[in-house]
Length: 358
Image (cartoon, rainbow, N blue to C red):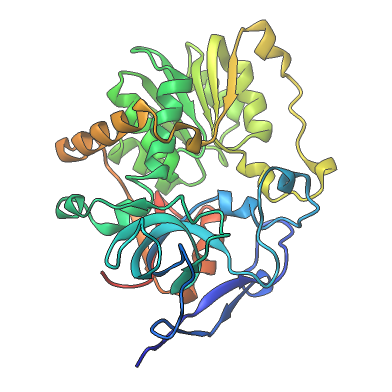
């Protein structure tokens, strides 16, 4: 039988604030006849194996008229939502990929994806080195050993420029990016301070990841916490939140501090620009000679630092210097709920959704 199930999750309506599973997403039951499909030049079919669940996807779910969408392509209502993940090539008319290849790239929240020449992602898939599967599970290749891990590494090393003895403060420190940034900073000899949203996560940061200090921002005033846990000021602020947290952190930054702007999740849910938080003390950037820089991880692809990451991360995993925490959820039907749970901060570390066995 060549006709196979191809369940997928489509965007039902543009979210206002944090999405609701039933209100904003719909699980659609479809089929795909792989054997009968006549592929045009450069087309190929993927059997999707696992997805990385990431905050950036929320940005792609904005109304097309949103100012944010002027800087990237979003998902239209009725379209399948996209994430980054690992897939197996099951049919191909593309010379770059053969049947049986494992690839990493942007794929739909669906069981199978038909990649066409006009898709922006057609040339951006990266081959997964199957030799690495001897030492690492497949789920690691959906983010940890790819763009997710690279994000943490290159931003801290290239923008943060960590120096032994300095202090780094990381917001959303128990999330995937935060926990990896913190551990790399520890390897580099920094004092690592993190904030998170539950006592359970504070315990994880202190007792498993060995942060020097961590606190629940819901239970303590941020200004007081930073005064207590960063008594010598902040040399690197790794910002995943933006808004008020950024404003307070700038007050505690030392002269020549570096602010790595990785994300601003506190602002992603706000669709009206008038309601976004206006940071009031940006003058600190001038007065303290602070370097404040955002980045796109794709800017680092193909550069020497990508190779350095690949070498270092495998070495750190084997030596036990890096602890990677992930939760694997099964099934297409659970993608939307897992995504919403992540936005609500229910995860510790990385959420991965497994679609099929390999």
